[in-house]
Length: 152
Image (cartoon, rainbow, N blue to C red; front, side, top):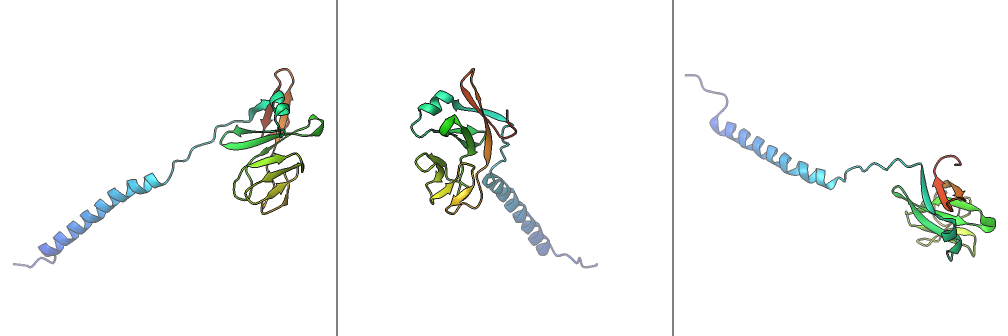
């Protein structure tokens, strides 16, 4: 009688070891899938209504923040009823910027970041300028529309 090269004990060790590895995989896969958040696509919007011109003019600091998809925007009323709109997230640490009419700048309170009225960073730690958006005032409805593309 010829001896088998695989003994019963070593076969059981391999079999049980494979079972343990399979069990670890079935337990860890859902845990890792749960920890990774799903990708949420941004809604395909090319234009939003920020506010009405009357609301903006009546506001104390002459600016309003609004949502543009998942981003936060800011629309500012300057001298001579000029409108400017920017992404309202500071490029340093994603804090929200606000308009300072006394200094005529956009200001981030987190680390004293300052932007001029073209969105260019002029002081503080912000590494790049704010994204400037296009504005359009529809006098018939008094709405201020903001878009990321060309002039409306």
